[in-house]
Image (cartoon, rainbow, N blue to C red; front, side, top):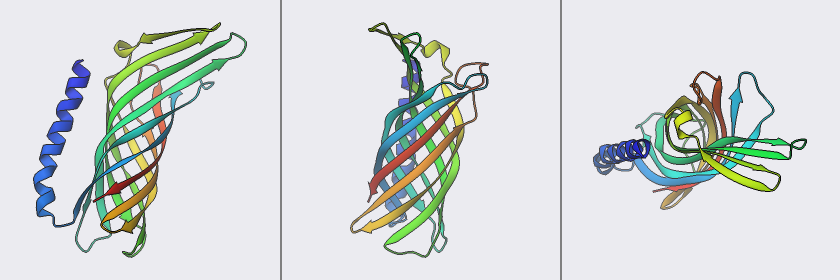
Length: 207
């Protein structure tokens, strides 16, 4: 509950801090929604037989442009389903580690061509993710069970994100598609050499 409360407070502070600037930016600041699919996994130093967990991500996006420059800033607040799966045919066992985060990327956005109806770009930058839910779901011999593992998971994950995308001008809105890869730098489970790896395929609209 404390982790969820912290995340909600951070989200509120973020939105209140950017709202006044949006009115003054005269089109240089755009809000939107963005969502899509996560293909997530956990990289372990001494184990590599696990498979990805497929989930979804959705959230509010904020784009900030800079006059006369081919660069901008993209950030937002995203609910992000992550984790990993493990299957053993020999033991008739399937386990899924479910890690759900509130994720805040702060990405530099570099345009790859002149302004136009189609604008490709590259994004890169850090992210912070706050754990909202952590469960271990196990199925064996036809029986399933779920265990809360919140006490075993670090409350904050930091890492780097990079990706490519394109904006499509559809007056009065802009549609965007994007592929991102997030590379966790901190251990998920303490002293286990376990880090998040997430491929995200996203689409959204901004206004």
